[in-house]
Length: 176
Image 1 (cartoon, rainbow, N blue to C red):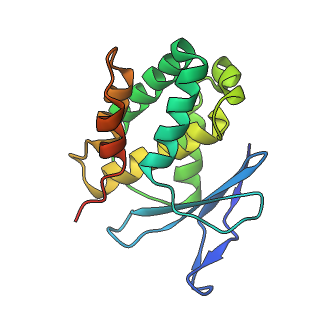
Image 2: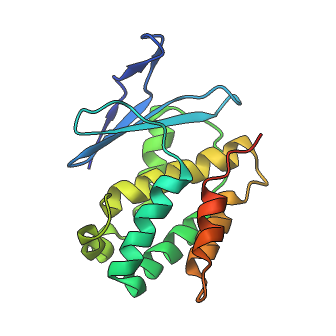
């Protein structure tokens, strides 16, 4: 993964990325959000395609595919992500250095190399998935300190008798 200062523009060139993460096939862009002072807006694209806003359902489907391939390793990965979720605190700054440190510090907890076998399953590689999930978690907690949806989905995925329909329903919830 390459981490660089933001260059990508959105909203007719009026908003520039704060930080960008480049992976083999994907790029993640983080912009200033609109919900709070330190809100972040996360976007990504694959191989030069159009920029998309990630939804929980995107990573959930990928994780379910990884579980089909190697459930034990996927659950170990999710357990580490759950630890990151529990430690996650709202951002007190959303500048380049803060966001870079968030990801680098997290990768000292979630050792990506331990989960690389999961790259054989699903769409996303585990490093992309980790960065995306870490950013989504901190975004959620920054905008609402008592947020629970991200953590709830992970807990549901870790259940022995997980209810896929409930997981997909929660991940696809679009709040009103």
